[in-house]
Amino acid sequence: MPAGEADVVARVLPSVVNVRTTTFGGDRGEGSGVVVDRRGILVTNYHVVRDARTVTVVFNDRRHRGARRAEVVGTAPERDLAVLRVRVRDLVPVRLGRSARLRLGDGLLAVGFPLGLGGPTVTRGIVSGLDRTISPSDGPTLEGLLQTDAAINPGNSGGALIDLGGRLVGINTAAARASQAENIGFAIAIDEAIPVIQEIRSKPAERRAWLGVSLDSVDSDLEAAQLGLDPSVRGAVVVAVVPASPAARAGLRELDVIVGLDGKQVRSASDVSRALRAVDPGDRIALDLVDSLGPRRVALVVAKRPATLGS
Image 1 (cartoon, rainbow, N blue to C red):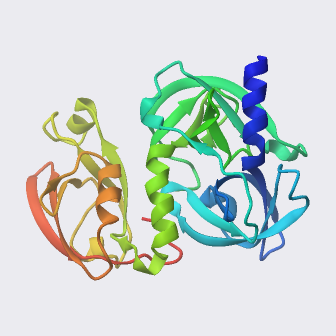
Image 2 (image 1 turned 180 degrees about the vertical axis):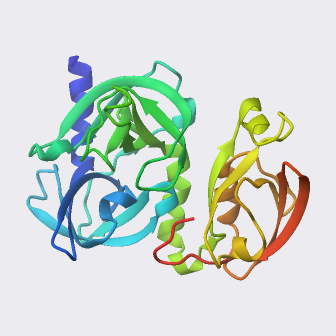
């Protein structure tokens, strides 16, 4: 690794932590996290702390030795994000970058704690793809992701993907199964993550609006045509409806495509997530839908997000 990049890593290491969990069944897990506020606020993946009875954090910062107990402030399972708090007030927050400014081929570094190796690991790669959508086997569809060939392994989840200036541009979240591909890893783009993190910090789960659907994006002519729609249609396709949810009561069905919310155009699943941030449980909203039979509009009252559900 060139000397300049080693200096970048040295600056970032105090901001990347090892997250350790235990479940009620006694199982132990490990992941990574990133310091985003000097007053004890960290970010990791939801799946790292899912079902955890205890969460502890181990710092790279020499001033904070040993494990510190962490509190889960809140989670956004549909974005695979969680916010943690530790009772430490002088942490080193990572510098934030802009994922929107990344181009294919830009250099990246992944920093985290993979495979229980006992210390931080750094891997190097490039931006291999932008705005990717993946469907993990054990979680909801994730969209708007960065793709990189930097090695991302179990334990890297929740760690930092940084540019060569040492700025955080992504939260590492998943790696493709080895049987399917090599050198393909993913991270939540920081431009997508920051509004979610801010919402978690400012708006408890019981105040966040919930539709009760899993969504994916219709973002190509081919995908629209496969749904029996005009190739020009763009929106958020319903891939699952939670029984007895607001969406189910309003008659939403799998393969419905949301193209508008309260009169505003929807072109992706991210658009729906962003629009819902301005809505409170109990509010009435209108959804413009289209399927192979044509367009329709439904009205529904959004509910508060259940503690065990994400969308």
